[in-house]
Image (cartoon, rainbow, N blue to C red; front, side):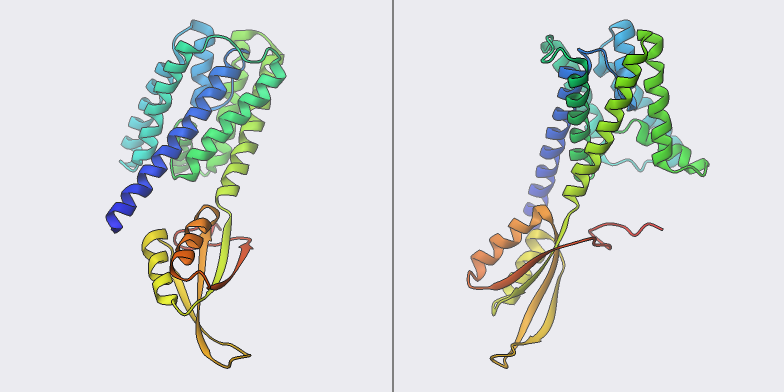
Length: 287
């Protein structure tokens, strides 16, 4: 049963990652590319090469990422997850496929294309990040630089994006296009933060039930979250009782509710949003 649940959970994660990659690709192909606007990252490099030469964006994106991954594996070791490689391959295929069938722009206003395209690109990357994936690109460059220089990954990625977007001036000879590129970068970064912070939102549950053992066992095996049993006493009844304390992510709350409804519909519980949860299975304390 545990293996089946793990397989289902991984399948769901890859499905969500694929959805995020599709949203990202649509943002580029439907809005940014038709408006001759680029953004940051390897997608931005691939877009600039496409604008300059007409060479398919998907092929360029794949080639650059393959080179970066091989260099990183040489310098950092084979520590890249399967999800990153999967994301790079799928996004390359989506770029090539969508560019082949979607020729006409949806909007003809550059600023609107910039905002919508940046939002979709950021939302797609954010969705991938929430599932533990990565789209590679400048993330890999940041890891390499951070290994040998005392520079934060965020600063490296920012510098890379600035250089990439600024270089679009060599193709378009337009300051306006460069400015739109920086707007894409800002909208994308903001959207990524919103998506990730929403997915990392955590909740604390107190569950009062005589069937606490069954509930605790199912939460541990099906939701894969730890459960703490607290000894309590009802003031009115003066009876000893066990209270379950559970910390879960926002998207896991419904799974816990489903278990409680099935085991003990009369259970009493409280739900509260918490500012942050640090430790195994949640966020890492950064110092």
